[in-house]
Length: 294
Image (cartoon, rainbow, N blue to C red; front, side, top):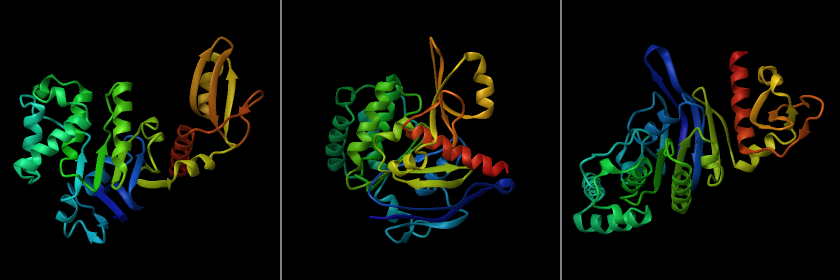
């Protein structure tokens, strides 16, 4: 299976482009789609889910243009949008039965599939509870269950961990990792830690354009030797923020321990540190903003 995003752009009113010239070729695995708010991630997700059309370029699913024949993808697509909503008075079982009918599953197959998925997302015991009483994490698990009803070959999840507590986020990440196998999973987020452990490759968007597409290891190599740890007094923090790209800071008894991404040593006492994906991501985004400003 193959997904080709070929020169895709999306223009809104007022000549505003949400995406421009995006090209990606994806195969089975978990693709982490990273970028700040407004980078174009949700716009791309809606195009891939056939909810909206691109203004330029094309998207090919197994060599079929989804703008010309969207049903070829819709039949094998699972989608959990950022603004996923539920009917609060329906139970989890009733909601999934309704969604199965919308997707065209026959009643017997749907019931078996729903039983399987409720177990997978750890909601079997809550199947007869009204969704209005579910926590945010439980609703998200219902959302992933509905996305998996048709056993999709491509699964799209847009900001699925927003608002979840750490335990729910970890559970959700593990579930996506287990589901990747022989399908394409596109996981869009602005939270680097949510994809660090599960993504087989990462695409970084900024300003509606593709800034990088690589394996996590390659992104880390790009900032090798450019990450520094430095201890400075609290009073020097404002000046440091103005001058350097700071990826993390921790206050301790001897001062503030900061991580800086820079090509040269930021000051006396700074020592090189092993880069993290957060460092690589911030370096990529910062470079794009610097170029745009120039």
